[in-house]
Image (cartoon, rainbow, N blue to C red; front, side, top):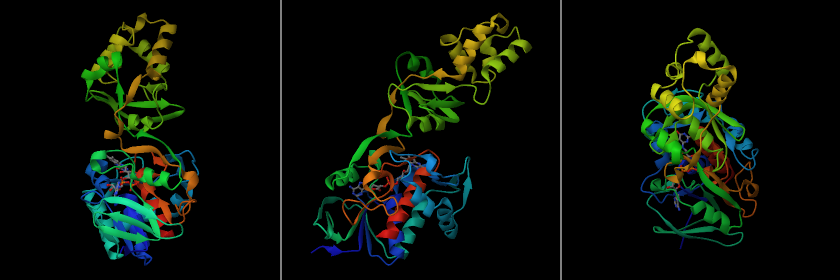
Length: 394
Ligand code: FDA
């Protein structure tokens, strides 16, 4: 005999815990099934251990999805301020780092503890170390989860098993398998918010500068992000690169403005007027990290005293500095990606309740869906908002 609940939630991550506590508060008997040995592992490791739990500037424009309208309803009904109110009720100290990004002052453990405390107060049961062997479902009847801890049944099943990034933290393709089995389309998945790798000459020329960071504007496919870029021993990372990686695919043209916020030609002409005898690498080395400027002048720019450049040459320099082509060979993949792009096609899911349009009682929430946020707290805000939407409906 299966033990019966009102709802089974698969995955005790951000979306699953939010869905469970919301449904529990409404008097629903909820069981959360988690196959890892503890809950909220990604929350714990997020934001360098301080969890960038939301972004006060969240709008639907901060998300990638085949249907950019899908996220609107849930985001409007559960805003960053709703989550902040819960954080404040639990007296968790936080601060804004930059660009609306809110982080815990002390530790992301406090966010996990808050979610678990809210779940327990709402009567939610959480089973960790509990792997699902199979899910059975009869038309119009209960969903039955056969697990290592016995069988559980409920008329609602919320799939909150996340994406494929960081497999060592419990990530699995479970949600996609369930979706396919119940007739849903799953859009192709790929790593997002992920460092890019370089190969060949680019890699050889930059690898020994690993650890060096500089502000850039990275542009690709009509998008641009201004922030730091970090050179790594395999390629490039840092916020500007992680952001643009979600818009980049192999073969796409990726450009870096190395003098962000400045008109490169105007700047070069001023330098030429004021410091005619100085060499390009000296002048560039005062505004870019010195070793990076030298490397640029060894391989990409002709170095000489500024007075020796004629106007066409200066224009060429300006064009290279403001749109330096970065030939990435790939990404570091799911091993280090913060998120998974693509996933369960939102066409088959209600945007107000997250319920399947094909199978009543089946819900998809969080990262398993084809909704992916930018870097900066947007992904957790989607997990809270979609978890809340389903928690109000089941
Ligand atoms: P999540 O991955 O959180 O949870 C899924 C859960 O389901 C996991 O506990 C998993 O073990 C479980 N599960 C999987 N398969 C299962 C199965 N078959 N049976 C049972 N359980 C199963 N975002 C942000 O907004 N701010 C930030 O600071 C960061 N930082 C960050 C750092 C790093 C290193 C990573 C990898 C990611 C981030 N993110 C982030 C992204 C954020 O962590 C992510 O978008 C959310 O955790 C997604 O929430 P979900 O609940 O959908 O999945």
